[in-house]
Image (tube, rainbow, N blue to C red; front, side, top):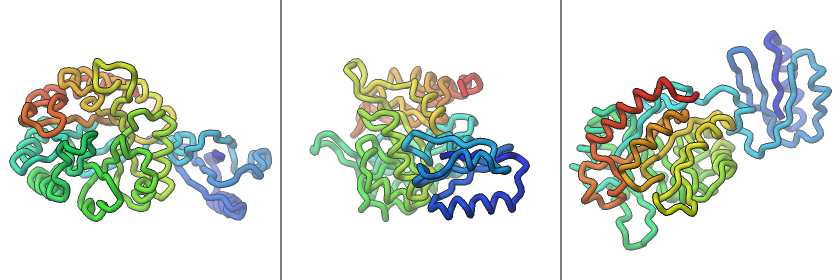
Length: 335
């Protein structure tokens, strides 16, 4: 249930109402906007008399919310959530944030070279896989702890905050100095992991599952937020359909849909969506035009010899072209 308060209410009225609601064994999520204050009531509101609430002098309107996701719901939190990482602000309608780097960290020389090139092109965060979920157990699985150490070295040298994927709760101690923890498509419904990340305070980049609905993505975000961590970034990375021309099918429509349903930032991964580097540029531009708050793009200094996802990785000079195109399109984005 949502309770919208009148603009001219007094602090005494506010405290009195909140005290009464808490006495009904309800949790209250307070969202203070420029003009209105919205109370999101969490718990069993079935016995709460909406008409009685509407009759209170302090109350403007009362609405019942049918969606099962509450904390991620825009009705509970009308204003856009802005997540700050280093000097970057993700969400809120500002310039789209570029997150770039290799699919996997392969060597010190590789990650430092890519980090410098993407920073020069305008990336605000460095991505790189230390732990790699692979379909085949015989494929390269990442450098693991050593990969995180190399990412941290690249961060120290370039100043770029780092984004890397976690696979299991047991790995959390290794992520103490990671700026943004990525939950990949395969782990989107790893609920024990989501609950544990909800107990922390680090920003979480949550990727949509390969065959997951919008509602399922938002419910996974709800798992994290229910634990107290509201720093969630939603990521569309393509879904599995009957089409085989590309690795996945990029659902551009999900960008405005998620912005309508949720206050959380929405970014797009055109690299995993297509699996083909030639299509990354046009889809990156399309995502920004649709209102994406950012992009996460794979960049490799030598894609032909990459140990992971070389065919979808951009060379640094191509990424620089994409970054410029994004800056050109951003003022005309649908927001």
